[in-house]
Amino acid sequence: MNYPHTIQTLIECFKKFPGIGEKNAERLSLHTLQMDEEVLNIFSKCLADIKIKTKRCKNCNHLTEEDYCEICKDSTRDHSIICVVEDPKNIITLEKIGKYNGVYFVLNGLISPLDGITPEDISLDKLIDRIKNEEIKEVIIAVKPSIEGETTTLYISRVLSGMNVKVTKIAHGVPMGAEMEYVDLMTLETALDNRILVS
Amino acid sequence: MNYPHTIQTLIECFKKFPGIGEKNAERLSLHTLQMDEEVLNIFSKCLADIKIKTKRCKNCNHLTEEDYCEICKDSTRDHSIICVVEDPKNIITLEKIGKYNGVYFVLNGLISPLDGITPEDISLDKLIDRIKNEEIKEVIIAVKPSIEGETTTLYISRVLSGMNVKVTKIAHGVPMGAEMEYVDLMTLETALDNRILVS
Image (cartoon, rainbow over all chains, first blue to last red; front, side, top):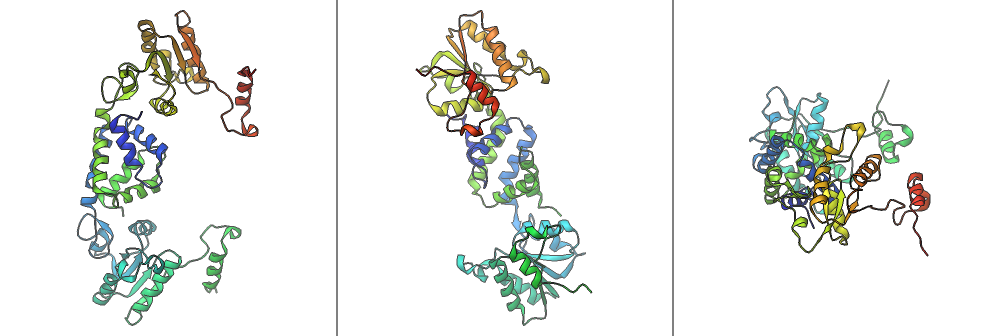
């Protein structure tokens, strides 16, 4: 005995999402019965459209519905600074700070020899082409502090070493507001190594 | 700076579900970009159809896409026993046991004087009509053991007291496999009160 066909199919669809199990899929599917028809229609349309409408920016790989993303098209931004991130999500987060006025470049992942992910796989060529062809002053690498992140950072800095461009990476250290006693040793070690002059 | 329109709208849709916050909605929406177009189209169609196709069984209020649900239409089941539940979900769970062969009745909630929910609000009339007009031998009440559940159980048993029908309720007590030391006192008290003869 299952739910009626449409509910049962909806449950199967919800289960395809990461982190949504049987019980949760059931709860979410039954909840749709209480939702506004209008919201359901908008939701339905978005799902049908999402893969057709959403593309990658030809310049930076960010998500967009046009050829170029809003940031690349924005002439008030400083196009001589490129911030390199792993995921479009990171752009949204960095933009929330509201302080960075340069542009971005989204890698298709991080270099990982263990997983067989080489520099060719993560569209680094496209980044290097941009640095060769545009007047880029600085490349800020903002990827996560993992082995893959550090490998990617190192690789980018080596490839760009011959060119007239400053390569920086965001600071890794004790997060703001953290209690010192709860900070893991690796973070603490990095924070010590990267200490900066106060006076 | 937001995501492109379709993704952003999808995030807003996911946020309308209980237990899905901003971060999770973002994660689920971005995940759709990696899903099969076919799955997305099925998902989309279900959402558009769900409220139109899903109805309540005219006999027992269970969810169905026809006038009567599969259980009410099943002539191999014992239509003289009605199990009263609060939610269609409970039917699915009880059916998983695979042992109950009677039929069901779904209440539209439980009586709750504090919330102003009266017997009229939970379609008890319909249940009583069935007992009057059909040859019902037993009504099994399977609602949660709360004040509302007990009130509803008591009310049903009183209303039916004059009629020639047995009214029972499912056992409340220590759940199977539970460690005695972790069972709450109210459950333990109920289990004591409801002890059954072993030999």
